[in-house]
Image (cartoon, rainbow, N blue to C red):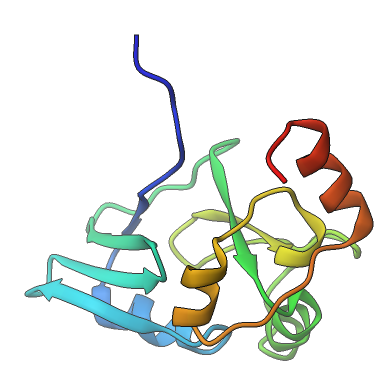
Length: 143
């Protein structure tokens, strides 16, 4: 039996790829990995990516969601608030994009998820973990 070792990518359904890229660029620095015409776009996140897939039929997921790891959660919250996006109460930071995708924002420093030093360096990031996150990693023998 195979073990799960991580997530390579997630796919979000959006009505229009260009509109979705413009909307997400309001809050995040995006590096486009590639495109397949007006049907798909791929946003690079170092060793992972997000795929935006065109789906012209609008819908909203009730419980399905994903968490994006960022280097500055407070900056994302401020940008979302400034744009009038409805958010959950701090310290949480969850929202729905215009296409109904439920997104949670988490700070890299505060969670046990970790990129290798080489990947962080390649992304131009120098990030430290909180003691709580380090304790979780140690407890699992991952540090």
